[in-house]
Image (cartoon, rainbow, N blue to C red; front, side):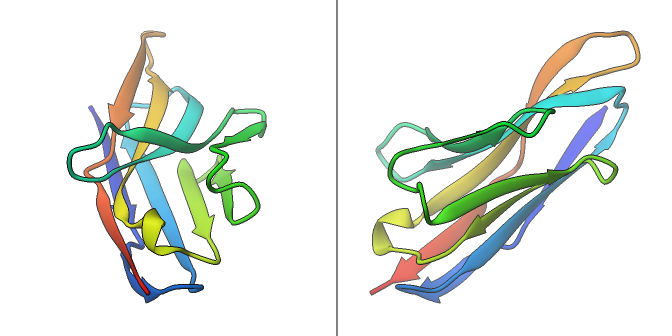
Length: 120
Protein backbone atom coordinates (compact mmCIF):
# COMPACT_ATOMS: atom_id res chain seq x y z
CA UNK A 1 0.00 0.00 0.00
CA UNK A 2 1.04 3.57 -0.71
CA UNK A 3 -0.19 6.67 1.07
CA UNK A 4 0.01 10.30 -0.05
CA UNK A 5 -0.46 13.07 2.47
CA UNK A 6 -0.85 16.62 1.20
CA UNK A 7 -0.47 19.74 3.28
CA UNK A 8 0.04 23.47 2.93
CA UNK A 9 -3.18 24.69 1.39
CA UNK A 10 -5.06 27.68 2.74
CA UNK A 11 -6.34 31.16 2.01
CA UNK A 12 -4.21 34.10 0.93
CA UNK A 13 -4.67 37.45 -0.71
CA UNK A 14 -3.61 38.27 -4.25
CA UNK A 15 0.16 38.40 -4.46
CA UNK A 16 0.65 36.07 -1.54
CA UNK A 17 2.51 32.77 -1.36
CA UNK A 18 1.82 29.21 -0.29
CA UNK A 19 3.90 26.05 -0.29
CA UNK A 20 2.23 22.72 -0.84
CA UNK A 21 3.80 19.43 0.23
CA UNK A 22 2.96 15.86 -0.68
CA UNK A 23 4.65 13.10 1.30
CA UNK A 24 4.59 9.57 -0.07
CA UNK A 25 4.98 6.51 2.14
CA UNK A 26 4.44 2.79 2.00
CA UNK A 27 5.69 0.01 -0.23
CA UNK A 28 8.03 1.98 -2.49
CA UNK A 29 10.97 0.79 -4.53
CA UNK A 30 11.27 4.07 -6.37
CA UNK A 31 9.24 7.07 -7.47
CA UNK A 32 9.37 8.34 -11.02
CA UNK A 33 7.06 11.12 -12.09
CA UNK A 34 5.71 13.49 -9.43
CA UNK A 35 3.26 16.23 -10.25
CA UNK A 36 0.61 18.67 -9.17
CA UNK A 37 -2.80 19.16 -10.74
CA UNK A 38 -5.70 21.43 -9.84
CA UNK A 39 -9.43 21.43 -10.32
CA UNK A 40 -12.25 23.92 -9.91
CA UNK A 41 -15.97 23.06 -9.88
CA UNK A 42 -17.31 22.29 -13.32
CA UNK A 43 -13.91 22.14 -14.95
CA UNK A 44 -11.53 19.35 -15.83
CA UNK A 45 -8.52 18.69 -13.71
CA UNK A 46 -5.50 20.42 -15.23
CA UNK A 47 -1.79 19.84 -14.92
CA UNK A 48 0.03 22.56 -13.01
CA UNK A 49 3.61 21.27 -12.83
CA UNK A 50 5.53 18.02 -12.85
CA UNK A 51 9.03 16.80 -12.24
CA UNK A 52 10.87 13.68 -13.30
CA UNK A 53 13.08 11.56 -11.08
CA UNK A 54 16.04 13.31 -12.68
CA UNK A 55 14.73 16.74 -11.82
CA UNK A 56 13.39 17.86 -15.20
CA UNK A 57 10.42 20.17 -14.69
CA UNK A 58 7.40 21.13 -16.73
CA UNK A 59 4.87 23.89 -16.04
CA UNK A 60 1.52 25.02 -17.32
CA UNK A 61 1.82 28.33 -19.12
CA UNK A 62 -0.50 29.97 -16.59
CA UNK A 63 1.93 29.39 -13.71
CA UNK A 64 5.33 29.75 -15.37
CA UNK A 65 7.51 32.20 -13.48
CA UNK A 66 5.28 32.08 -10.39
CA UNK A 67 5.26 28.43 -9.28
CA UNK A 68 8.22 26.17 -8.59
CA UNK A 69 8.05 22.40 -8.25
CA UNK A 70 10.77 20.49 -6.43
CA UNK A 71 11.27 17.11 -4.83
CA UNK A 72 13.22 15.61 -1.97
CA UNK A 73 13.96 12.06 -3.03
CA UNK A 74 15.20 10.70 0.32
CA UNK A 75 11.99 12.01 1.91
CA UNK A 76 9.75 10.88 -1.00
CA UNK A 77 8.19 14.32 -0.99
CA UNK A 78 7.22 16.75 -3.71
CA UNK A 79 6.68 20.45 -3.14
CA UNK A 80 4.94 23.25 -4.99
CA UNK A 81 6.05 26.76 -4.10
CA UNK A 82 3.38 29.17 -5.29
CA UNK A 83 4.27 32.87 -5.41
CA UNK A 84 2.42 35.91 -6.67
CA UNK A 85 -0.85 34.04 -6.38
CA UNK A 86 -3.87 35.23 -8.32
CA UNK A 87 -7.60 34.65 -7.78
CA UNK A 88 -7.65 32.36 -10.82
CA UNK A 89 -5.26 30.02 -8.97
CA UNK A 90 -8.10 29.19 -6.58
CA UNK A 91 -8.71 25.45 -6.83
CA UNK A 92 -8.28 22.12 -5.13
CA UNK A 93 -4.71 20.99 -5.72
CA UNK A 94 -3.84 17.31 -6.05
CA UNK A 95 -0.47 15.65 -6.15
CA UNK A 96 0.07 12.54 -8.20
CA UNK A 97 3.04 10.24 -8.30
CA UNK A 98 4.15 7.14 -10.15
CA UNK A 99 5.43 4.54 -7.73
CA UNK A 100 7.38 1.41 -8.54
CA UNK A 101 6.82 -1.22 -5.87
CA UNK A 102 9.04 -4.12 -4.81
CA UNK A 103 7.49 -6.32 -7.49
CA UNK A 104 8.55 -3.78 -10.12
CA UNK A 105 4.95 -2.81 -10.75
CA UNK A 106 4.37 0.84 -11.64
CA UNK A 107 1.18 2.48 -10.35
CA UNK A 108 -0.12 6.05 -10.31
CA UNK A 109 -1.43 7.40 -7.00
CA UNK A 110 -3.29 10.61 -6.18
CA UNK A 111 -3.38 12.70 -3.03
CA UNK A 112 -6.59 13.64 -1.26
CA UNK A 113 -6.48 17.25 -2.45
CA UNK A 114 -5.88 20.49 -0.62
CA UNK A 115 -7.85 23.70 -1.08
CA UNK A 116 -6.10 26.88 -2.18
CA UNK A 117 -8.15 30.08 -2.11
CA UNK A 118 -6.83 33.41 -3.35
CA UNK A 119 -8.90 36.50 -2.64
CA UNK A 120 -8.65 39.80 -4.45
